[in-house]
Each structure stands twice: as C-alpha cells, then as structure tokens.
Image (cartoon, rainbow, N blue to C red; front, side, top):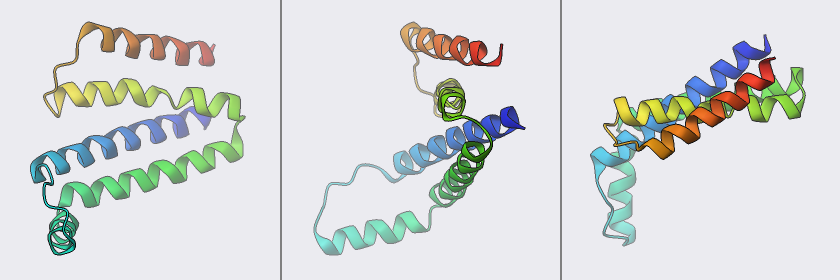
Length: 120
C-alpha cells in the first residue's frame, strides 16, 4: 500500500508539474503587470486545459501524500516521494523537449538509488 501511494504521489506530481510548465510556456512570458493586463492573463490561463489538469493532478498528489503520511513514517514518506525527481526529469526531456545534461541524469540516478535503499 505504501509503495502504491508513493507511486501515485510521484506520478501525479510529476505530470502536474510538467503540464503546468507546458501551459506557461505555451502562454509565454508575462511582460505587462498592470492590473488590467494581469486580469487578461489570469482569464487566459484559467481557460488553459494544461493548467486545469495540472491543478487536478497536483491536488491528487497532495491528497495521496496526506494519506501516505497517515499510514507510513515521515522518515519513509518524504525520501520515498523523492522518486518524483526522476519522473520529472524524464518528462522534462521527453515531453517538454528539454536538454537534460549528464549531471542532472546522475543526480536523478542517485535519487533513484536512495529510494531503492528505502525499499530494502
């Protein structure tokens, strides 16, 4: 049960972060910070399905994390959900098309090794 919750937290948080990034990249940089311009930006962002779905996924992740905290020790839950860093790195490269250098892959690999140690 614990590892299922860890997987749910990691996958939904990673997908939520990736969709949030994609939605904001599709929108573009915000240059005008006048109240009327910000109102238009907010209205446009509310209509973005990327951002809407990202909020749902991040809410699921948060809820699953709360359930995980109720059934597992904090010393397990927080390090285990670091697996999110690995899945986020994968999504950054393959979904968002980011260039991920070897140092970031090495860091993600070390995180994965740490999570593996928790399972032993």
